[in-house]
Image 1 (cartoon, rainbow over the protein chains, first blue to last red):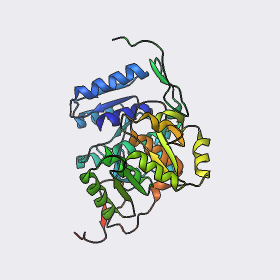
Image 2 (image 1 turned 45 degrees about the vertical axis):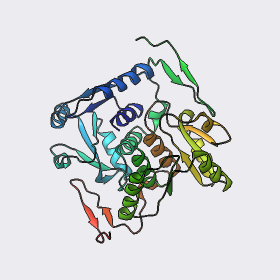
Image 3 (image 1 turned 135 degrees about the vertical axis):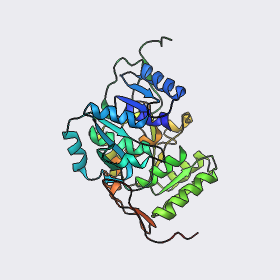
Image 4 (image 1 turned 120 degrees about the vertical axis):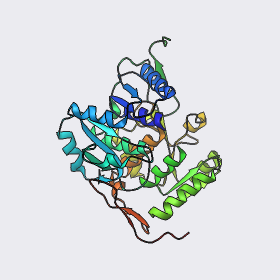
Length: 167
Length: 167
């Protein structure tokens, strides 16, 4: 699941991922392999305590958006427009099932935003938030220095490999 | 992961879910519990061989849309408009990593559609397809006979429980 969240973040336009509190080398390696093959830049950090990660982000004037089923509904389109207009770097926080209650407070999150009001998936929530933020343009983003590219096709699988992979 | 796919399907407006080839009672129970608590109707079937599920769907004039990294990019907005205009029931097929090659053929899928051209998650792909299909309105959908509802909130968690749960 964490790998899916990180890959989704990358594919939908985020510039990096922080796996808070936990270290997991196999996830890190997976993500780094995808970045090496599929291009672009994407940072991956892990093991930072969540409070520390947020505190550092805020020190740099970053905005913290916590995605939660309980927040204001993103279907209110003004919400994302307002956030976009702030022109600040955004940390999007998604959690596994149990998120610490403190995260809902002003000390940690600037916004608590829900994607609909039904239980679903942190991957779905992240997807919609980034899609709204980038107005769908993220799906046309070109990733620089990609070794592998998909050639869109009505039938079957077409990949172009631009160089052999250096290991 | 399968639970996330099914919950996402429900939350984003699908009317049911078929877990092909596999039986998993714990997933079925999870989903049925969510439906009982959070309302609406949502069918859950499992164990049907994938070819049979698709053949039956097509017999009933249903359309089959296979979401895959290799297909036509959904960022071409005309694509979803065209599909919507057909006014046919749609089966959206997402797979785990290895999907049988036959699924790409005309015999089984009417459309192979990619959500961007990067590796990410079947949850993300399903989310965007349904969101485009329903024009974002699915996030405002009311689920009938819900026992639990979220009361959207800027801070903290607010749930209303309309009746005690009958077990």
